[in-house]
Length: 95
Image (cartoon, rainbow, N blue to C red; front, side):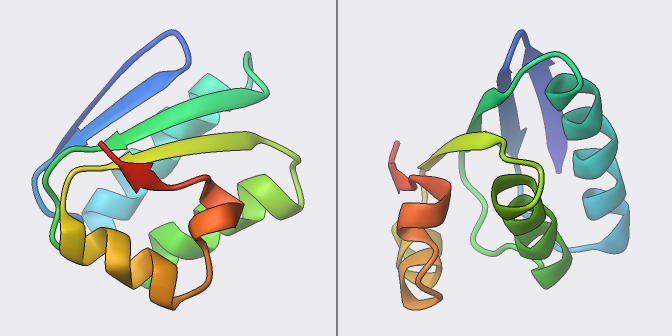
């Protein structure tokens, strides 16, 4: 997995599958949300997402009041987010 950011946009390529991936995402996103209350997360091609990342994003929206606009490139991952009833929470849509 690779993660990059510019301003309030975060791009994640590759599969999100390990604790190391979660740590990278959390570290970068924490830095971005320190300056922005609204972020765009582009999950370019990941087939999956770990529960720790889902929980972290959920905390950002519900507790920290960060507005997330998520763009998902993989249809299966978008369906998973929808099955978990998180589409509206993350404002998830097809990239």
